[in-house]
Length: 381
Ligand SMILES: Cc1cc2nc3c(=O)[nH]c(=O)nc-3n(C[C@H](O)[C@H](O)[C@H](O)COP(=O)(O)OP(=O)(O)OC[C@H]3O[C@@H](n4cnc5c(N)ncnc54)[C@H](O)[C@@H]3O)c2cc1C
Image 1: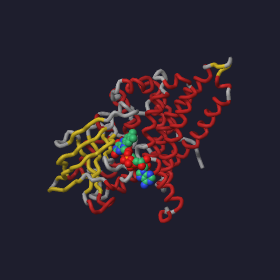
Image 2: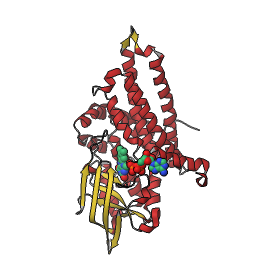
Image 3: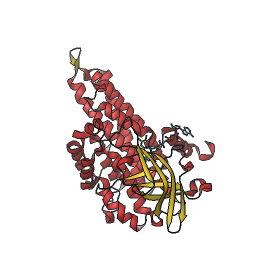
Image 4: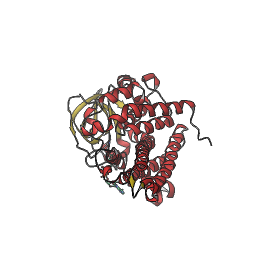
């Protein structure tokens, strides 16, 4: 067993840490306060390769292994958790399009996405179903060399600034999960309309709903074989779930470190509040849990890199780690006293931002179902 990072992995982690400190953290609150998409940050992330972590080199990406991508997203999240939604989407799209899209789709979309010039969204959820993703109703019907799409997608991250979506639709409505296909749909296609949400956190990364009315896409925009998208998207989620864990850990680690500085300089009853075990123990406890969680996430990514099963481990990352990080950040808020509840410190924003990951990419109950099936056996749960 070897826990050491390679020289390249250490170099990536160190350089993204410096980028997070210098370029992301100073403006983290600005985008939230102004409800603005971090456009300049996006260009910078593209320029240093953060949006091409999992995009094949032939299409302008870095084509890093999954562990390296995880180290990078963890460090980036210390600076700006919300910018990591972009990194996450690019990892998802980089993997899915890189492996399964036609040459023309790869050429048209991967290089500008990796460069930070175009945003590609993931459009699975619908108003009536999220957890039960195979129940989607959006329809795609082949007509000659085109597909015609009709339906509604909801909860889509980055929708309002997106240029295209990987849209999941039924091509065989009677076949359940085996009737789902994926398409690359440019958002400037006639028949696409979008509407923004007002979320409690991640405000600059505006989510929204999309309507598709007789939207035509060329047949070459089909991603992978017809009716073959569901298992592929679920396999890609296995990998992004570990990335989400590390993204939450980056934000929580930054908050813990800021809190350590705060409790050392804040005094009560004639001494730094850190001298009280009631203050130092939560920091010790969360630091311990976060260390355990980090290794779970990194090991899950290592399993993926080594093409070993990691379905159960990915679900563990997605269930336990965001919940743990929200708990850690909430305790840090309390350790800041009333200041923690103000917008003078980033802790309240991190709490709002990280909370979105309790639900996104599969809520806790769904992850526990996956873990239980694996541990107890599908036929017994
Ligand atoms: C910040 C954020 C970003 C998102 N980004 C995207 C995106 O980019 N693209 C996209 O397609 N979607 C996105 N989503 C949607 C997300 O994937 C769904 O919200 C999620 O899968 C849950 O689906 P739902 O909201 O429909 O909840 P439901 O499926 O209605 O579930 C509601 C509750 O019931 C529980 N539940 C459901 N079934 C069971 C069961 N059998 N047993 C026990 N409990 C159950 C769930 O765990 C949940 O707590 C995002 C969501 C958030 C919050």
